[in-house]
Figure 1 (cartoon, rainbow, N blue to C red):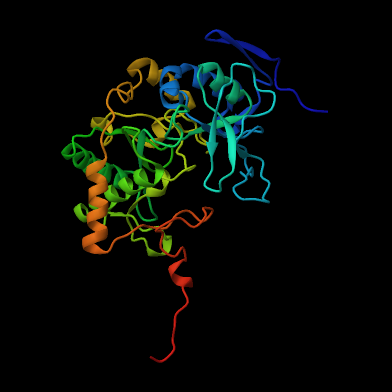
Figure 2 (tube, rainbow, N blue to C red):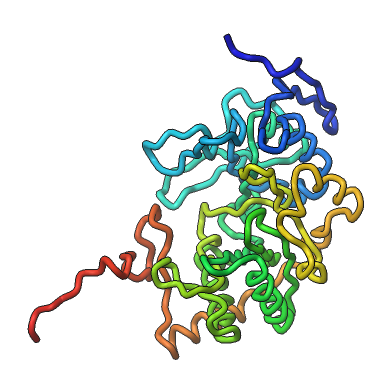
Length: 355
């Protein structure tokens, strides 16, 4: 017999009613957070969540049984975990759930959830969605990103403080270009900085712009930041993951809960407070009260879309003058035009034939 976790709850979310079944189901048992707590978190940060997700094709990271000890997420074909990424709209979705038609790098297509109402977010959370992973495009134009995503990922031997140091240098670099970056914690050890851009370029160009930012940061902070894709080649530094700008690669949205035992939240922060905050400050329990106090710190992100032409000129300059061409794509991608051999350096075949 299936164990029930409380009677269903009906929540009024905007003009829609969302039914939450098993509201007392432990979603984060290590800290006593339930399914209803997660749904209410998203409602409490509603304006900010919708600013991050509105009309964006969004992959749902679903943990229907909760983030419990031993649970695993399906990350590759043939591996079945207790959690999974939902890239197609779930069957039986309410009529108010709208979609975007997207094309994956493989050429396959899908209709993916594209939130237009906060009720869509609450409904998805009721289905076990812990994290929302939006594409950097709107459903009106799914081939031209309007967001440059700069993901600072501390490597072994570095931590959040190292990512913050790099983020401040990135802010200065963007300011020189006349751009404004919007920071948030990743929900882990890293920092995400978003730049709203004009939707004039394809995914390849936007990815090249991210590479250009990373290479410039490598020059400005030698030994502190790296763009090397292969982990075995990375120094003890912060990795700027340029591939987060490739088609179908996504980052947890602002206000998204992350699938870690203490229920952290990817939280927008002021540049001025980056040095003082800790990623552990922001959880399902604390994010709503903070939002009620400070509002959405990304409220101005849509005010200006920036031109990335200078970054693309930097990319072309580095290719022309320094021989720095394109860099590897993720392993699940088809071979991309201009990409170097996607072979781990230690596995490259060494030719020992006498010349």
